[in-house]
Image (cartoon, rainbow, N blue to C red; front, side):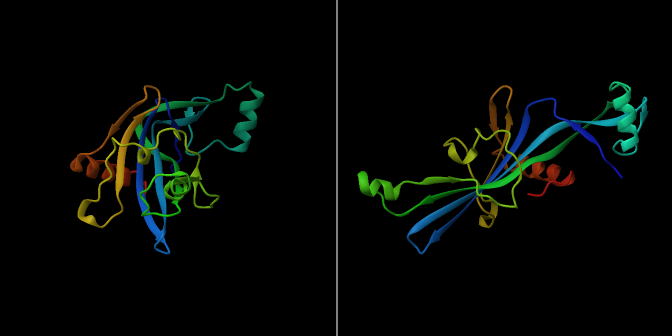
Length: 188
């Protein structure tokens, strides 16, 4: 069994968003943004009394660790880096009348897009650590459809500590990132 402890020491994330849009009864428009947040981390192994453990510590080892004042179970860097999915979920928005391009109090309300937030769903994994950084709400991010078949998708690197967002717009760089994510078991 390969169980590793992943220590997220830096604020580096990969954000993947894809837009799925549909019309309700050819009048209203519902848009779902599928979002996946992946975090970089440094792998560490558990050690008990300085010796590497094959998996997570046992209950007996936890008791001995507690009785020793917290000195027997430690972690040690392995020198390997990895990725793990922190959040996978959706956000919904609704525009009551999709093709109405007019201004005014009443008609403006009908033509405005309303954010319905994240629905209660068993298909949402984790909690979003960078909720403030939404790719779909930015005009400087490009959503691409290579080949025209998949939904429009945007990929970006984000560092929460510095606030730097870097879009991955180069097709070759996108393909390499997707291959790397698939190699560590992330599903896109």
